Image (cartoon, rainbow, N blue to C red; front, top):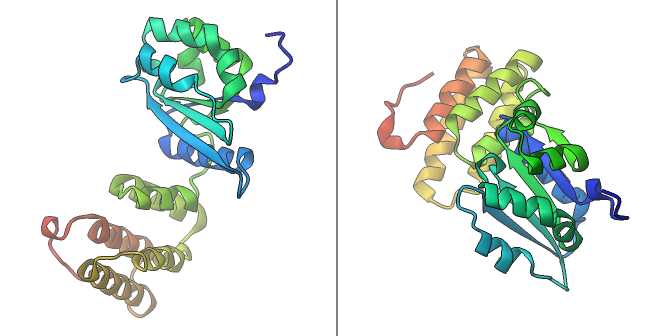
Length: 234
């Protein structure tokens, strides 16, 4: 592309199977391109449900009073028609909005698809690799899973954190969960969660039970509906 526009500053490809990492990286990107107080609109499109009419009617709309960020999830599901449309109109779209394209496929898999649009993104967009093993799991990954009530993801993140940081993480994780409880509006659920957290904290500090085990059991109790688990102590 020979246009004066810096495509890498407007078009981003997040590729790889680590959804948590993709979401975390996109959140960081939003903070960079939309500093606090800057007006912006974010639109999310799932490519398996995307149509040419939606693109033509919604995407090519100027927002004169604020910036726009368009996020296209699952580009591996694009039809040939839509891939061709994106390839033909990428420059025009980037002139109107910031563009984020997401894929569960890693960079090599996208390259092997022999899709001209994917090739264009890999060559000209800012590419962020989110494949397994790219980086260590962080506390932000854990809190992201909590917000989504993703039990499997939360336990995976906790175990990775304990592997890397050790048992001192127990009180930190319990502190995060305690902070989450403060925002629960349902009084019964809030009391239940605080009781579980208190019991877990006591198990670590007074009973000397392994912090990793305590946190795993606590997460199962907190993120599993009350009717679906048998209440057991630590």
